[in-house]
Image (cartoon, rainbow, N blue to C red; front, side):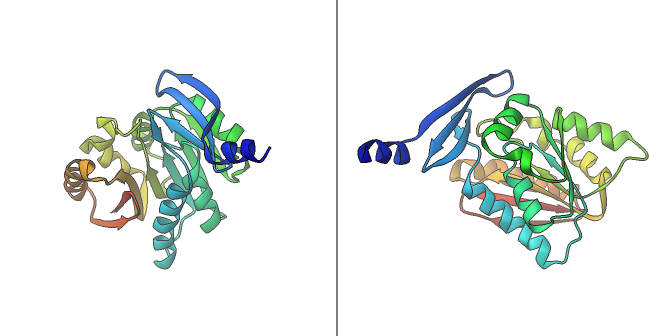
Length: 220
């Protein structure tokens, strides 16, 4: 009995699999008695990302940044949404996720349904932002989160000047966009190019380093 418990606790166990047109094989895995989401062979959720988002959002709290309306492009399991709820409990959130299978997994295994003030849109994030940017009376956001990895890759549309420019059109004055980037050695050249692109669009860029990620802040 003890041996079985030991193996179940320390050895990852796949408890659910999904097949997705967008992400291929999606696995919900139990490791150390906690669920984890794996897509494209990459871990997409967990304590490291929650700590990363907590660190980023704490920077905003320290600056007394008002956050009432938030848009999350690439909702995933909702790691960021949980941290927003924790630090800005009255903030209204819209989470955009292209893959309804991910949302189903997040609600079933990661308690996403318990996040208050969260509206979910199943949509392509770039098209969603473009549509909002064209609307004259669209609600504007104090904070936009962009976390659009498929495996360890980001679709090119989310690094384009058009997408970045559309983001500025949906931000309130003094609004901020936070982009999540993997920052291992192999990722650095691509991230550095992205930062140069973002500097051409946003008035100010600041960087926050976490254990395995770089969070790029674009201020409007």
